[in-house]
Length: 358
Ligand code: NAD
Ligand code: ZN
Image (cartoon, rainbow, N blue to C red; front, side, top):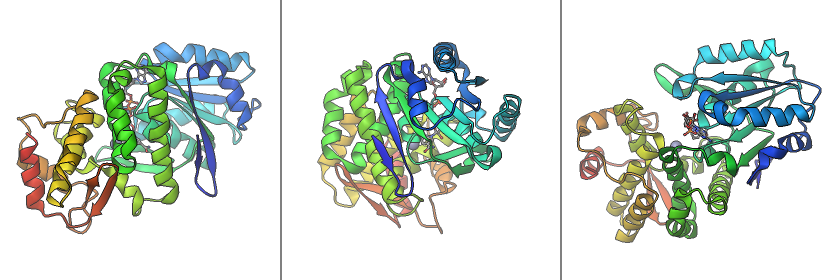
């Protein structure tokens, strides 16, 4: 799959066992052996996948260093950026060096931002190891968090290539598998009705990590995102549709304190909310029913746990950056595979829907 952004394009390779030949992909796409590479990964991924990956690169003559950060969102911080830059300096990275992100979206966003800022930008390679990271491997958004706001310190920095080895996904915890499928389904819901049907039919295989099914799901998910992003590289009209389910979802994550609900779980509930909103704009019951069915089949939550207080959720939503100039902007499904941006949704409707979600 080629992500074509007009002035810039890069390939996404998806397949089983790709990492066994990682060095040849890197060489093919202009990553030089003359300059050292820095592999950035997290503790959990490192314990399973770092050693064979690094050994393969070294056997091919690459000079590598690795940096292992703690798992989890808290590693996306400015202090971590600083310590990774220290690491890059110690490893002797120069302008021709590359940073390799081995891990999920956390590592991808963090390592990508290190690559975007070190010496004003060096090459970047993504090796995603979660299903969710199909989303972050397209679009070039890289960032760290500020204590008061997620992803607020960042840049656009495209990778040279993305290497998606389906074998690495075999070790993903089941809950992370489901959460990742949420964004896969989202890409179907905004763009491709047939893919939504396919997800419903193949949900069991996806949950069982069947490589062929996973490969196709990631290919489709990346393709939809690439299509949307290439038509609208900077966040304007079309790109906003990628936020389906995210307005409610982000509020739920914030209220739950980022522990109780994974991102994918929160946006699953958010997408159900958006589908309910769709009903009010005249979408058929079928749109709501299909949305709910496919997400449930993927093992995702489709109801909001009772203890979420509607007022607290509404309050959290008001702080979401997607509320521009006091109006509530929502991405609303009008059919399966089609969404519209509704710029002024009544607050009262949203409140009723949050209540109905419980
Ligand atoms: P993550 O990177 O934290 O990974 C989830 C957990 O799974 C971690 O504990 C990790 O150690 C573990 N893990 C990863 N791969 C594994 C494997 N193969 N085997 C075993 N364990 C493994 O989370 P994520 O869900 O991949 O990504 C979430 C992040 O992505 C968020 O920070 C979000 O902001 C970001 N994101 C960015 C974009 C973008 O466009 N840049 C898009 C979507 C999400
Ligand atoms: Zn998301």
